[in-house]
Image 1 (cartoon, rainbow, N blue to C red):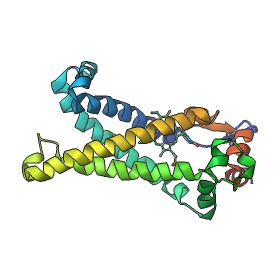
Image 2 (image 1 turned 180 degrees about the vertical axis):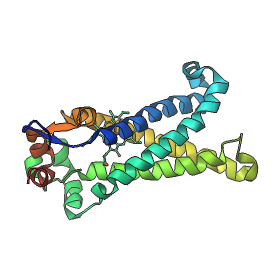
Image 3 (image 1 turned 120 degrees about the vertical axis):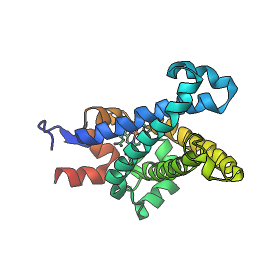
Image 4 (image 1 turned 180 degrees about the horizontal axis):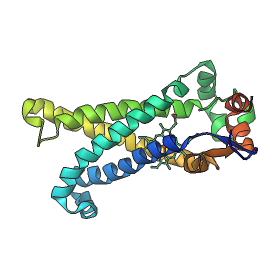
Length: 207
Ligand code: HEM
């Protein structure tokens, strides 16, 4: 519990630091990755000290994001198991989009959308790491046939596309649900926020 009786702790300082290291490295990776992806976005290399530095930095920052996300995913893994209520929640997606929360099954710590996005992130990060190692010319590409390197480049671009779209949805949802960003910045949410958006988790937290 928080010292303030009107607030509930949702994230500890360590969890928040872990999340924001992942988020900052994601932004750096998305910008440097897009810069390397297509000549029309090459100008973004100016943010990283030019083309060569972008190429050097991108994979190392990728390792930072992977390790940071791995720790984050291990912390939150058990909160993201899907249950019957989640299937029902997905069936009633029109009620979700129209903010008719009273019609929905009781939501626990995370809703089904957050859980599905969590496992989408896990899949993308795994694919990005594996394909990224294969296309990391400086150290590893020589150990793989050229066809495998080409396939890995395609997998890398596709996984990055899905992750970028996923994170756009993640950020949109975080801003859409007032009070969520505060949870990840200050670590706490109000009793009202918890009761409205995550009633089952609310009851478990104030027991
Ligand atoms: C770039 C800006 C980002 C913002 C503004 C943001 C915001 C947030 C917020 C507000 C929450 C709390 C949601 C809640 O408690 O209901 C959250 C949770 C979370 N975020 Fe982010 N995030 C960002 C980027 C990322 C990135 C890049 C990743 C991973 C690649 C990520 C992974 C997660 C995970 C795993 C959770 C816990 C949700 C779960 O386990 O289902 N976030 N984020």
